[in-house]
Amino acid sequence: MITQQLQLPNGQTIAYQLDLRARRTIGLKITAEGLVVHAPKRISTSQLQQVLQEKSSWIQQKLALREANQVAPMQWLDGEPLLFMGQDIVLTLIAHPTSKAVTLEGDKLLVRSPYINNPDWVARKVLQWYAQQALPDFKRRVALIAAQMGEQVSGVGLSNAKSRWGSCNSRKQIRLNWRLIQAPPHVIQYVVCHEMAHLKEMNHSARFYAVQASLFPQYEHAEKALKALSPILHRMA
Image (cartoon, rainbow, N blue to C red):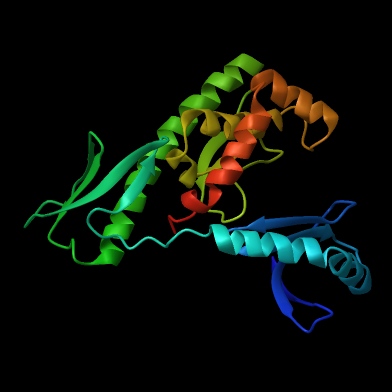
């Protein structure tokens, strides 16, 4: 993606990420990082600027709402609240001369280490733990849905994307954002079903949504829940 600037009539400048794709329309999305614009590859600069100017009120409103809903960044300190599979857990740091183990015991994520006063080290170990929990869970869900659909998947991997929860390509490779493992199981299942539906329809047409609905009928409710949770899930850098 390319970083661009939108100049508003009042002189204010808004930075945004421009993603040029093989598509016919312009799509705007507010993510944890700010404004993302998806546009056709051959669109002219003047056309794009005209559309963005027309949508400037909406963009400013959504960015202001995002700012108001932002959550505090992770500090990686003892007692930090975390989420795992939709459940509230607490980061618990325990000084230990040799151990570097991370374990979930009840509602506590225990990190034993001689380096508990190093936030960067703690962050790295906790993020590794989340990724280690995410991959087998996601693989299990994909395998079950693939069997249900009568489809074959060539691979399942983790994504660290800031603006996408998953992807499915023409080689039938599924990638899912590891941050999803923080979300409730039904939200994880919704995203997995969404990406699996692309095995049948590599688009977002009415046929695609029919496939998605057959896999996960309550997808609209789960989609709203994911949007509401998004700022919290993205606390994990």
